Length: 93
Image (cartoon, rainbow, N blue to C red; front, side, top):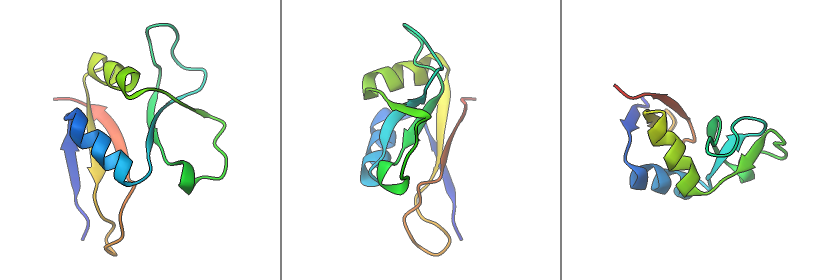
């Protein structure tokens, strides 16, 4: 059985992403200037081409993450025991 975890801890999010080859990204065409736009964690080795995403710095990523009061919902392992890349952003309570 797989379980989900929730955090707003920057180091925990960064570590989870790095262990899976993930990089901070935003959806192209969203945001401008101070606004980073719609956030994503992109896994380049798991997708051949993703022209919709643009890599951004962790600094810009977490600035937007905090401004929008987000939490990171994530899964460590799939139900079969393999490492999972499932994640999503939700409103912080």
